[in-house]
Image 1 (cartoon, rainbow, N blue to C red):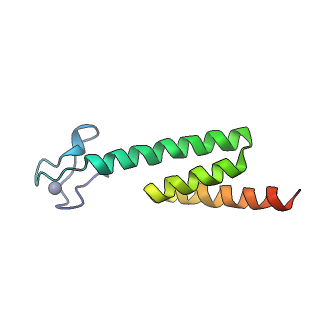
Image 2: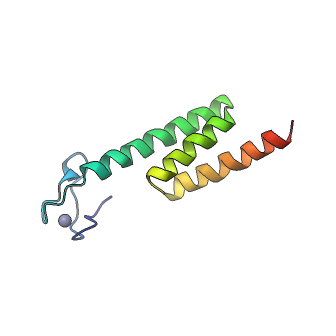
Length: 90
Ligand SMILES: [Zn+2]
């Protein structure tokens, strides 16, 4: 989130951007959700490294529910694809 979704003012970099300096809108909750989505993406990648494909699919789906980004959409697609191969391959 680089601009205030409400007034389009440029937001200061985190953590200062939580409250918009122009309109006073409070984005702390949104910021927390973004942080959680980033954390879940990291956990997805870690699960993929371990070969825990089903866990990765679950984590990626959770991350996408919190915040849909091109990265976690790709990550979810990859995990779903990998999980379907591992389910059918055995
Ligand atoms: Zn604003």
